[in-house]
Image (cartoon, rainbow, N blue to C red; front, side):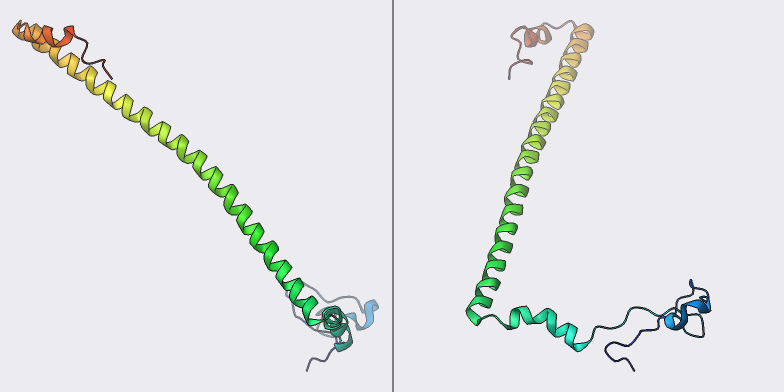
Length: 138
C-alpha cells in the first residue's frame, strides 16, 4: 500500500540490476525506486496560499484570469480573421486571373475558328466579325 512519503517501485525492462552500493535505492529484483509521494503537509503547503485569502479576493483572481483568457481568445480571433481576409483576397485575385486566362483562350480559339472558316469558304462575314475588335473588348 502506498503511503505519503513512501518510495514507489515501478518496474521497467530498460533498467538492469543496480549495484549494491546504492543501498535502499533499488530493490532486490533490480528495479530502481522512484521519487517518494508528497506528504500531506507538503500538499497542504502548496494550497495554503489560496486558503488564507478572502472569498472576494479569490473571486477577483478567478475573474481576472477569466478576463485575461477571454482577451487572449479575442486576440487570437482578431489575428486569425486578419490573416484569413488577406488570404481570401489573394485567392479572389488568383481566381479572377484564372477566369481572364480562360476567356482569352476561348476568344483565341474562336478567332482561329473564324480564320479557318474564312480560308475554307472565302466568305466575307468571317472577316467582318474581326474588323471591329469585338474579341478584345472587355
